[in-house]
Amino acid sequence: MRGSGDRLRVLRIKSGLSQHALSSEVQISRPTLSAYENGSKISKRNAQKLAEFFDVEESYFYKSPVEELDDEKTKFYERIIDNKDAIIAEKDKIIKLQDILIDELRRNR
Image 1: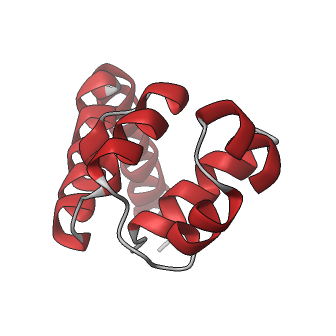
Image 2: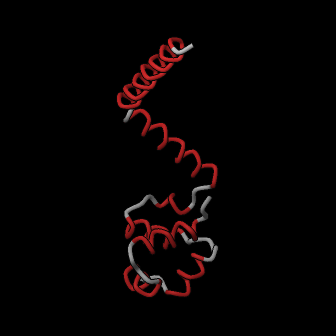
């Protein structure tokens, strides 16, 4: 599970920014960003700036590991629901193949 500092670091790196560049963009000092990435609590004011810059909810920086896990489970279930028809079709194919194999095994006894 990631803490707020890890979340910030991942967003920064995915955006291709150094701490210095991000510091200039959001008007937060580089030492402060470094402290956040190393585990210091992100102030509400700076969380708002960072959330706006990275287009995430401010709460993204304050989620507990349990909330993060719940979000991942929700995303997993949403992917299942979104792909329900494809999953059912694959399941039906597997069942047909299983039936063919069983028939083949019975014939070869």
